[in-house]
Length: 126
Image (cartoon, rainbow, N blue to C red; front, top):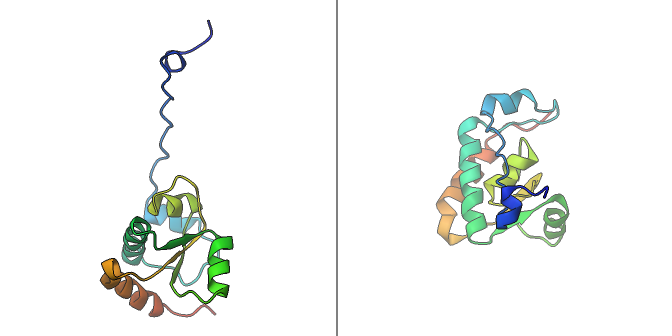
């Protein structure tokens, strides 16, 4: 009686995709303590490296999991996103995540080393 066509056929309605925001729109909403900030080019490299790490299951997601493995002595590249939704999508999950740790792996070692070098070159916060 009150069902839509999607419910009758057993199909789930398509979720509406959020409009993709540009780097400059994201930078405008950054907190004042978010320094140093990765450049647009470095952000792209980090997202690509995160995708490769997720493909090889060499990634830790979320504050709790990342903190637990740091305390255990695991090494990696930490990345905090502009928005948790964007960082979650970068690693291939629908769940938002505010921090990820990318572990080194021989499949993407060159990209990892390049990102690590650029992150270490960023100025220290005051």
